Amino acid sequence: MKFTVSKKFTFESAHSLPYLPVGHKCRNVHGHSYVVEVFCTGPLDARGFVVDFAEISDAMKPLVDRLDHQFLNDILSFATTAENLGAWIIEQVSPALPSLSHVHVHETARTCARVER
Image (tube, rainbow, N blue to C red; front, side):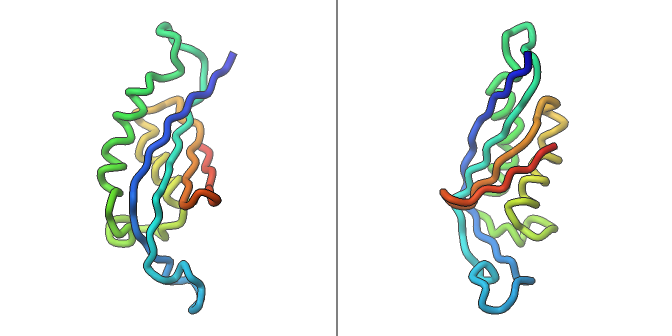
């Protein structure tokens, strides 16, 4: 059998997408209450886990600490879209979480980008 577990993380950040056309609201500096959900998929280990939830927290803590209450354009070297943020998160935490399968990055309650490994 294959199992999937997930854990959610939240942080507050601002960004802008300055390459968008004049008049597009996301061109302006704006903030989000981000919710990132990390999914790990695989068989159960000897403990009965896909991965211990504490291991997911340990892998994500440095990222959440780095992103929380920051202007993302100042600390990340790419266009700060939800899609790119999800890809970056996967790159950062994959070494610590080999069972990581995908992440969801919610910018709002109604918008989400899913990025698969």
